[in-house]
Picture (cartoon, rainbow, N blue to C red):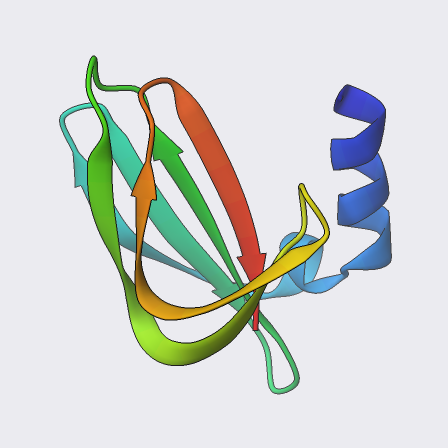
Length: 88
């Protein structure tokens, strides 16, 4: 798992050098965006004891970098104790 995260960081320079904007930092929920002129990546964490909904900053097609799948929505539901990395 950690090797996958390191590879994602290497393959997506925006994770290292993009501007960072914290969208949610409430309780045990954290969402932030790393963006530059070409890409934006959202990193979401739900450390609550139950599932939580996260509203995405823009509707549209997002790539789930952890599962190599796509979603087309403006909201995601994260189970307890999970995270998600989305690329637009």
